[in-house]
Image (cartoon, rainbow, N blue to C red):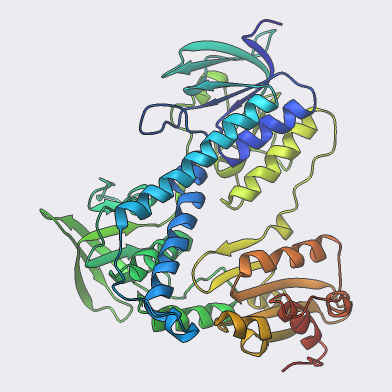
Length: 477
């Protein structure tokens, strides 16, 4: 086999693509992975949106901005007096970029360790399959054609722009521009109260911006359990985020150094806001442009997603697609699980991804995390259930941390006690949710969690107590 023919070719090195490539290599295949992301020097920057302009840099800025806010407001309560506090935004952004590069370099190291051949450039179908496999053309820093017997498409997604208001990343920002604002805007507008909008709005609010969030839906965080969403709305509003629901955007116009948004509020009244910067976070679209799907006969659905079955198989033999470019939640960890599953299916194994136990996280403060069904979904489905909640206010570790906001909520089948959903708003919710995921994968009951010994003092005790609350027998509340 020449160095241009591979058992598996992965197009895209985001969370789904690079994990798929590594797992395929572990299974003994010769693997190539193609990715076009570049750093500021033009070198390779694998990791996709998540590593470069998404999950990783946003968490870095969330952490830095939270430190800044704590130093200015919360440290005094701990007996720590800070004099002359100031913001060094260039250093904050530099640290964020360093964290991104460390992740980029880590992926390149993993490719080398696992003998994955990496090509820096854009991969696209060069035609239909031949006897040797599918020809994949690489353009950009690397320009050549390779062949793969099996193809995994993992090209991710792009930010969706408002009609008539394209991103310029100077005044009208996608997630990319929102992570690289060089000076704290006095007034920041955010269109879309989803994960990205709330996280980025939180970052810049903590650093001193007056933030206005405009959301088209009449309800806040509609995918979140209603009780948790109401608690979140109350907390974010108290922090200073100006959140407006049921908004209809009429126009977005840019001036020399500002953006004006004309909109209609939930009461039908005409409103206008002028902002120094505007972040637009109204969803993402599958990144299939430039893939040359038509050359190979690869089928896309009406929204531009690659059509796949439950096993991530496309309409073409030996062509698979995973992550944001296919159906299902646009989550990095969902893409990773699909990547592993597809690599194992290619090897004749039984890879599996359970959409019912994929956790969701919003990394605001407080964090919000959940897995399984919400209370409103159970009601709509006519499922008889029991609910149990426990507030962090009654948790010793939360008191010691100085963060007692939020709660843990369990939902269990009224007859069998099987856990149907767990919803958390509060400190370290992103870490606490994993226990619920494991429990639900093993079809555990609320009583199982209630009977497991949890370390004291720990935030995880709130999980145990919420499980006890299903049977109305909490011990600390």
